[in-house]
Image (cartoon, rainbow, N blue to C red; front, side, top):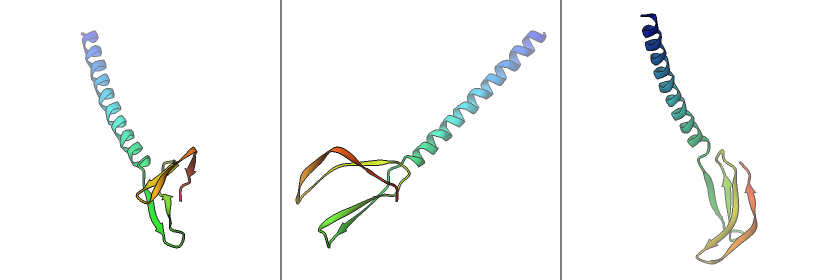
Length: 85
């Protein structure tokens, strides 16, 4: 009888552990989504006829180039890091 009770108790603990692990995994995924979301500020600089891009998120970003309606595509050989502002 003790073996059956012990096995049932072990199964119950393992079920609880699996549930807790799944909840922790979901919480970590949510936190990663919040911390690694990309947010930038973009503004046109009329004095220089250019633009300003600021990294306002928590993730490191790199600038690889630019292309626009009035600008020929320009791709850099090495990316420029965009520091957090």
